[in-house]
Amino acid sequence: MIIQFENEINEVQKEAILNRIKGLKYKPTEVKTQKGNYLIGIGKKDFDIRSIGAMPGIKDIHIVSDDYKLVSRKWKVNPTTIDLGNGVMIEEGGFQVMAGPCSIEGEDQIRKTIAHLKEQGVSIMRGGVYKPRSSPYSFRGMGNEGLKLWYELAQEAGIKIITEVMQVSQIQEMDPYVDIYQVGARNTQNFNLLDELGKNTDKPVMIKRGISGTIDELLYSAEYVFSAGNERLLLCERGIRTYENATRNTMDLNAIAVLKEKTHLPVIADPSHGIGIRHHVAPIALASIMAGADGVIFEIHEKPEEAFSDGQQTLNFAESARLINQLNQTFALRKSFNQA
Ligand code: PEP
Ligand code: MN
Image (spheres, rainbow, N blue to C red):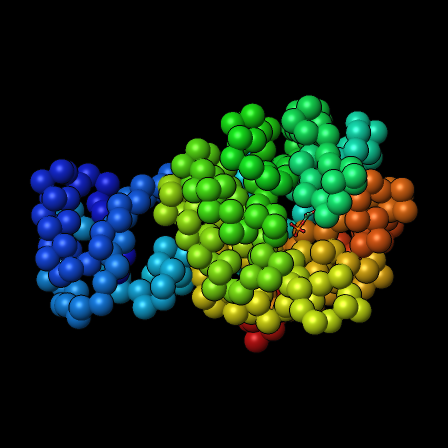
């Protein structure tokens, strides 16, 4: 069960509610986020929801049959909107493009990418300054100095940034320079990191699906961050590892449709890592929109063949411009289907 407390609830009312929950042998967990005050009750016994719902201090009560609670659509029917400020919103019924290099490489690259995004009307730039690389000898990112430089240039241009945080100790130093944190596929089940992103920042967090993670596991990961205090969350399908080795990963378009049904959180598609082959990125991006994605994130570089990482799946600026145009057209088509 999820109880949403009234903002003005007092300690006596809260105590009475907690005692009632414990009396039902439900295990209560209090959750306080930037948006609300909740009590999660975990238990099995049937009870009359009205008898609790009428208690003073309760705004709303819901029975949620899913094992994850706060991220479930069964509780919150209205989709979550992520407001990044300056009119940049990620929301159902809208569509956001996030594009940029796999790795931030230097000032010239940042400037050129920002100029391209501005030209294309894109408001969110992606890029990694801490890179999880399979080999320790590969480029591992410019770190926080790179992030500061990037953030300054992006701010000047009115561009928001999304970047990966790899460990708990990075949160504090990164926080002033991040618009959206990305939790990478290798960290989806780093529960310490998820907890800390719940407790120690109000910035939105986009959680990528684990390389071998199920849809439910992704939802549980989001539940960690929400229940630790941060409900500004996005989910990202980025392909999973299967027996298929013709592509880097297997982009699971099913997951997009299923996630849109199971959760109120925005769902973003990453076709670059999803298929891992440059000339297949665009069709998979378009297909993701038709599957219901609220946004697409993809990798671009002025000269993909010279990119420090993931060049094989990176679009050049001309390819990116073509894709953005097609994405807008495809989104309009989806909207017309939904209205029909
Ligand atoms: C990335 O976005 O560059 C990245 C490393 O993604 P993932 O965690 O999905 O592999
Ligand atoms: Mn990459």
